[in-house]
Length: 511
Image 1 (cartoon, rainbow, N blue to C red):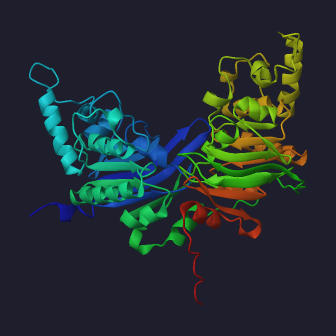
Image 2 (cartoon, rainbow, N blue to C red):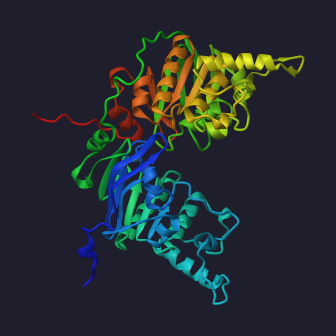
Image 3 (cartoon, helix red, strand yellow):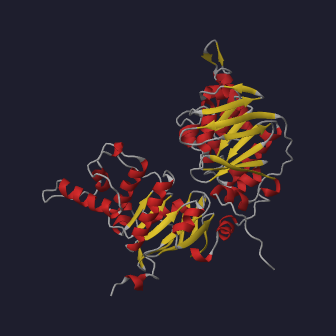
């Protein structure tokens, strides 16, 4: 008699009242999660709901500040990724790190290759074991093939085989279909069924509702780092999940504004990129705040970077004030009045190691130079003007921008681009990773910019921010515009439906 039926109702892994805090932020607040053998549990929530933090706790990257992790009912401590691996927990991430110069077998067993009695890598055994793993998941790959010669889907299968090479009992799949074709997704579904039949507990993280309802047995919903509810997927519908994901009020936490929208400033027609987005077109008016919403992989940031000249589109026309402008570089964009505040301010926005004043004046050196020589007094004057305008909190303008808080770093990056006196400012996740007070300051400043006639594009994954700050919202899905929403239609449920590709509206309940 096998044990599996008896264990079916006992979780392999349980998180009980798990709390995780970072300076100024409570990422998880007493959440719970149960993963059962032979079942797929979908972890559902908006961006920022706490899903990634939970995965890092399960895999030993983060340690919780409170609560209990249990494996087969017994409390455990996962201090390191090695601890998680030894406990049979493995993760397949959307962007798993693989090594192009190594073979398939070497990628699968890197870090834990079988050894001979002399301590050397047993290559024959490694290839034999890799072959068994690949056959187990139905991957027709040569163990000797160089990874650089494989396509995306094949690399994904190598990542799955590597995860299973540690004899995992729990498999975490984090957005596993983001880079796969329709055929490859179907093959992944078949693999999931194989893993279920082997009794493995699977945590499946996806923003795509069709995937969740296709393969999940159970669901758990997080919202703002808190547990909302869980249950069997057969007992809930798409509308129920949407309401659990977004069930909060957003009416009173954003600055009031009475927008005065003017003429068209920016027109984008037929923007396309071979791999990132297609058929993007919209109009932005003077004094307007236009929101862009979408889930992971929607292509919002990729499009904004193309609009700013960081990457080149394969097709598309940009009109500014009715005139066609060619934008091949960020310098072209700035010269035509378009600036971009990136999501990753540490790597793409601020120059760590330089003082505040030089960060602010960097794109405006023409205004602070004479006869080819920088004028220090002019630099300080320009930097002080915009630092005061944004209420930047710093000991002095000589302070290294790397020593500022996240919120003040964001203000420096915004100040840098405002000093170029643009017509259009693109803010990509403008309040990501900053505290509540700094968020409010950024929101107030966005309203001020719009009231002064600047046109604002705001990319945000936070539904309350999108609704609370935008005059209109463009929803993107899979690199295309799924909908444009405004007025009374601008609701959390509507945004999530368009972003997740849910076309059917909820049916009214009978009295």
